[in-house]
Image (tube, rainbow, N blue to C red; front, side, top):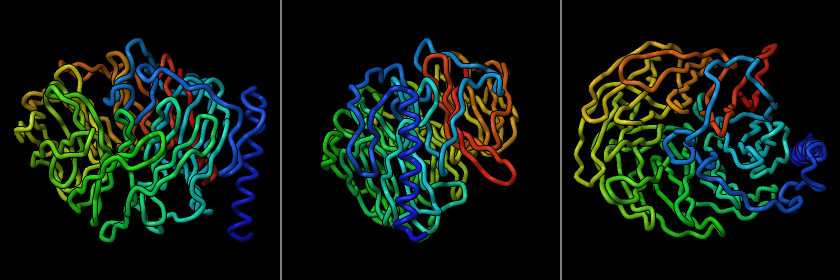
Length: 439
């Protein structure tokens, strides 16, 4: 079967499955073909403050909305539905009123997709093929061709993919209709061909994307409605993988990003550099976290370091240590920073001075980031083992846990009383991904 017939065969399968699922859900009378017209119109969704529309949730800090809850034991009895996910990806689920969005990639065929699943049943509603060729030939074994998490703004899903030696943004309606697509800049690493991982973030009418590599690195903002370039800022040509994040800190809105031996802040309205504090190492993967007027980040190559900087423009490095949270982000709340390092050790540090309040060995390797639900922190290692413990500086206090799969790389999302997770299982030597709803 040639590349074209492969494409048509795969598209026909996903279309057939989508039609069957949509009919069973009563959601649509027609399903979009690849790059085709949309199904029936879907009304603009609402609820960004209480749902999970972007990487790291409603407030960008991986804290579930007030009133949310999640089980503290993870086993099959807690799964209310499980849906197989085609291909492979490490992007995290994005949750709206009726749908859950993911990206995935089929490296055999060279395809990259955005997928939508029913939030109530888990069944796949639609699959939109975004790129049918152009996947890079080399990648890090822990990375995928679908690692960035999409953003949703109530009117469109916007995905970032590394394809054809560039970073692309693609906007799709909640019904699965392609709206616009733009190449936002060249991306062609030469020294470290480890792929791409940064998730886009939203600010006002913009979607903002970062691309740090050994070429012309950049931050760029594009208009959400049209994809038109709003501003573009050149960064140092240093390899890093962290996602930008926007928050109000030290009295103003700031876009924070780590990498290139620094934590830096930009004005999200125009991309101008506000300040840059020298700390950390060249390559980071986690997203900057914050508490009060302090920002925190961790890096892993070529050295291990976690750093706290003051976000007021002074450039002050408040404290550092030699701990390493390379792929995973940390969690900052109520004056303390919680982290599970690459060595599999959970830490609680006092935010103001980095004093270690406690440490506890959990074991395993970590790519998924801790999430706070109420006063409970949930974190999963790459081997699928989960841990639930209190967000308390007094001591490590376990309140549950359990094994949920054979692999967990994506970070869960919690909306209402349900945790949504992307996992993988091994069966008879074959790997299969699943989207789970746990309650």
